[in-house]
Length: 272
Image 1 (tube, rainbow, N blue to C red):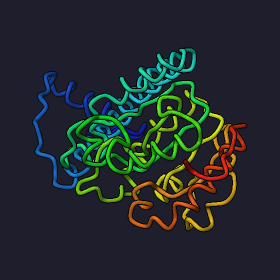
Image 2 (cartoon, one colour):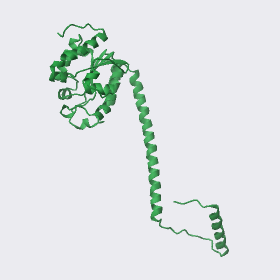
Image 3 (tube, helix red, strand yellow):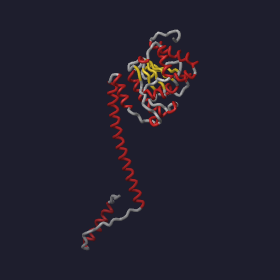
Image 4 (spheres, rainbow, N blue to C red):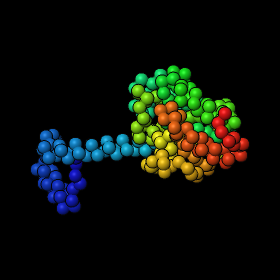
């Protein structure tokens, strides 16, 4: 690349040109000179830096446009009624490919179901085979038990809202990985902010840890209320765990009784 001449070199060049003019030489031709390897390396480095700068500017502009679009969408979501807001969230989720689960055998996204203005919301960890088939959370054996738990509280399934941390079935019904939960949970948070339930029941350790941002045991998370996103959260066992260990159903019922007391529901002395 050309370099600026110093005043001394400018004077020397001017003197040399005047010397040639005195000799009657007026026309000059520039001979192309191959750059040295060092010069080529410097040129390539300058080009790479310029390209990186241009790419950074482009990415910044794209990010600004994306942020403006997201703000517009969130504003519309905040100002919409719960039914419309949940529809906007579902549209934003789309045919999600944000994490690896979309390529690991899921049939469809399982968004959530229930009353958009529910006082009580249940959150599980992720859909299983039956849920993936039907597109609705908690419809298999664990879902049937959850229905009985809801009925024992004096409620119907359509009076509460049910969702999961991840919206796609993990292969083989494995536990969702941390990065999968981190990628998908913002949609769950938006569902919670839209529904504004008076109480949330986290079903199982994965849901509890993701919602609360804790890495703790069920024993430590159960038995107390957490303040969470403007509402109250209680932790209990996942229905699938209760199917494997029915001895814990009594403990889960104790958790639900506390939720009922908080919501002002009549608490029966025993289930059924």
